[in-house]
Length: 404
Image (cartoon, rainbow, N blue to C red; front, side, top):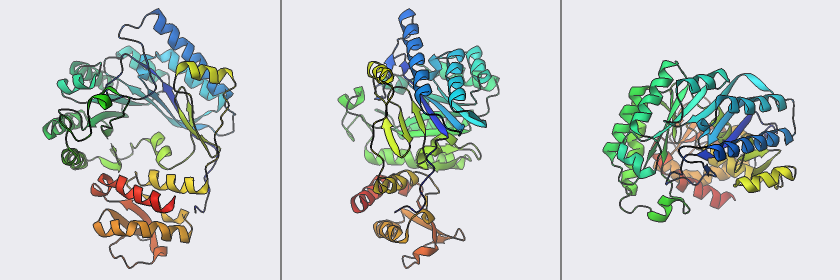
């Protein structure tokens, strides 16, 4: 299977902040809606949750291994004050330690912060921000159920630039109802004009429990058809790479030196902590997801925050290494596989290599085009950009069917 087992000690921590003003129509994340005005009940809800979250952190066994990345996701983490986030960061520092130069990321939404609040985040040690724009078209924002407007986006970007925030990312979504290629092109051009160091460009996924999932069927109007969404993906790849962004992961682009270090932990199949309701973790060769509602999460904390999950099997680790590794532009390093495992992988991938969806790199970093190869000469296997990425689900389905 895999020759070298990975280190069991996490160096990354994900913190789930569930609070949102409203639920977007595509969202199936574990969240708690607090409304536009908040109020005393919302304040108590946040205070209670932070106390439980800190207890969750404190109940996790400490090791002599400081975390190198922290990621506050949600939900809308920018609904929390700098002081509240600082308390959580301090809890992590006390329990695990935080490495010098750690990447500490915060998801922020337009309309949820002003200049003073963002400055407070910076003073609290946050040094990377992900701005949830989703679209630069006002009608598409309404269709999505987003709580912000284009004016909010403009103001948020102005604040970021006034404070000389260097490391910030923009989120965009494609495949939305009524979205056209022209909409996609306009959003990309406006994003490039802002010049973020990073862009995350996701395809809409219809989850059954969401408003969109109940209202629409995949591929049916007003959703773009499969050919149009594929063209949006190609357009995004062509436009952003031409503008100097590296397409380093299926849905992510970065200027040189600005890849998301935290998310790479997931894609490299390395261990990580997850704290908060619905947060996933990968610790001690166990994958575990915390309860998805606040009530059940609090009960789990009160019961001692016991992680009850089976250990990953060798087969599980192999399949997840392939599934996650093929999301990265550099693909997978073949040195980690035993020869017989590599032979099985190659037998699955050979048809896709002929189609041009798979690329092989030898020890001299040269592209191997022939099917008649010595497997020991292959150093990397990766998906072609963009066609291999577009058909990654087909490729992975074959691997899972043959190797599981």
